[in-house]
Image 1 (cartoon, protein in one colour):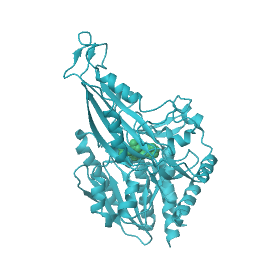
Image 2: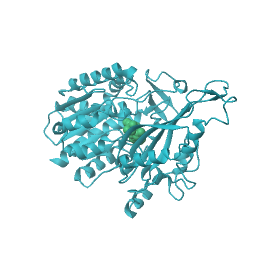
Image 3: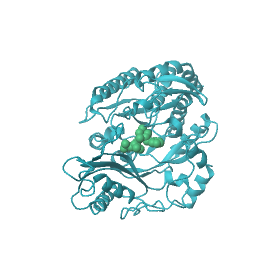
Image 4: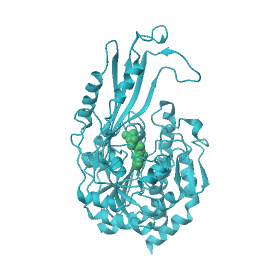
Length: 460
Ligand code: BES
Ligand code: ZN
């Protein structure tokens, strides 16, 4: 009876659960922008209060950046750790939103009902699926099925600067039988997933300086080196004609996937044409001879995420700028070493800077790829539990995004990460009009109840 009772409770409480999520979504906890520091703090306070209402001894733990939220609730079964992040990405460009990003709303769309607002999918909606499953369990049973430690971060979207020192200081408290992370997606709307591969990330910002000041491009153009021209040449040189990245040593540590994994991925029936078609594209832009699924899951990339310099406002201005800069990120796989690649990239760039120009570097995050072992019986138990909730059986999948903490759980807290999430490819995370399907939220909450039940049974 017990699991069904919890599932029914989740169904009955859905409207109230949505109200709670809306309250959290209204807090603009943009971690990368210091102007929103008080809002990050408010989101942490909100979560502390919500967890306390479940009987968790939750508290806000200060860091040099935004606070962590931590707390444990006792229970009989295994000790599970749950991780999610309460911070969100900036909302710009604001004019591309159809509504105020922090005034969330339920919308009817041709594909079903969605929760629209910044953070709905990444990651507030996802983290609340777990909390709501716990709430329902507690309401039905008076206790939780197992001991659970909650660990919620407020700096994930800005590279987690405080995370490693904090985890190192609290390694004992973070040690558990399993670390559940809810920040990934479904394979598709029928197929739930456990993510077993994440790409690493290396961020670099480069600024090229030419003349000491902005110049009239008629008066000086031709004689003065234009830093945008230098920057464009560098960016253009990062890929060759076959889509490979030209940074020396870049492919050191990049493995070929095993035949077994290739066969398993082939079996997923990934529809590359639809994946690209949904965003108005038709031909995969990565290395020649690779499938689109390989390009996003098992091959490394180099992307320019932003570029600035000169005049980009309305109208036209004949300026020859003093500076030009670009933000460039690399997604890493296998054993690629972010620190070695940072050096190699910088060296390559320095060699391309002509006389009279200089380059400055600003490094951002550096995390290795993760490849997680799923041989523990808990994985099969969780996979089965997910399969019970969704139309089709759950799959083990890769993920093109990066969640550095998954590796830290393993290395710092000696705890195996298990990544389960309910996002969809069209959630527009990090973009205008982010949404989370009501189905993701509802079935996601039900999925966690099933997973908690399965993991407790499996351990007992
Ligand atoms: N939730 C995402 C990771 C993700 C992306 C999962 C795509 C599933 C599909 C996470 O919040 C994120 O965006 N991470 C950043 C890395 C961070 C170090 C800035 C990313 O992947 O860019
Ligand atoms: Zn996220």
